[in-house]
Length: 250
Image 1 (cartoon, rainbow, N blue to C red):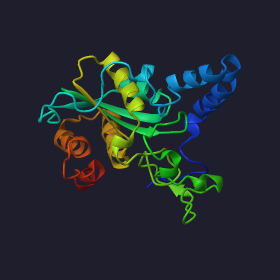
Image 2: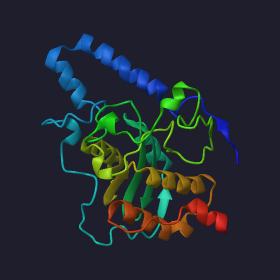
Image 3: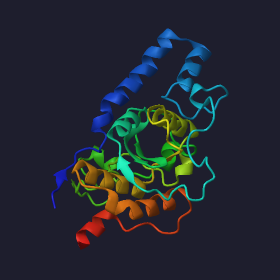
């Protein structure tokens, strides 16, 4: 198993975005004053927690989640990885990285969060974070046992990682609406957009994406994928066997 030394969390790719976020908080007040500055930030995609009237992020009808009322909405005939939509969603403030899968009906979005926006969670914020990144200050991966290595097989881990949200209902509505608008603008025929930052869901989405990156067909994994999305978004009772385990058995 290939391993690499981790001196800091997987935050390096977004350091420049965090810098821009902080710089904006310094520069914008010099251009705007008082309530105008506060409203400007709340209306921007740097703040998903304001929940104020006439927030431009929330104008119009809800564009994410269950909308059709079709009980078979998650019985997808096929799914495919969209590199374009994955890049588009990854560019949204507050999102560290994203994997987007398109089906004959829906778009499914797995996201990992970062520090480039506030209010990405509906409640709790940093006080309810699921990752322990304290080891980055000590040059280790796992702060508890001092392990300096990370096997690089999972996008989101319990230590030195981007941030997950176990229950997708706890993701900010403003953030989900922002993501759904971006996807529907580029894929207007999508019936529903489902978004989650659940650690297991995102890591499994990454494994499906790896298959696509290697030029392998995703058709053999359709049943597994449908079980995954039903478990995450439709009250399914079981998680599928991880694709990595199924491949090891072959």
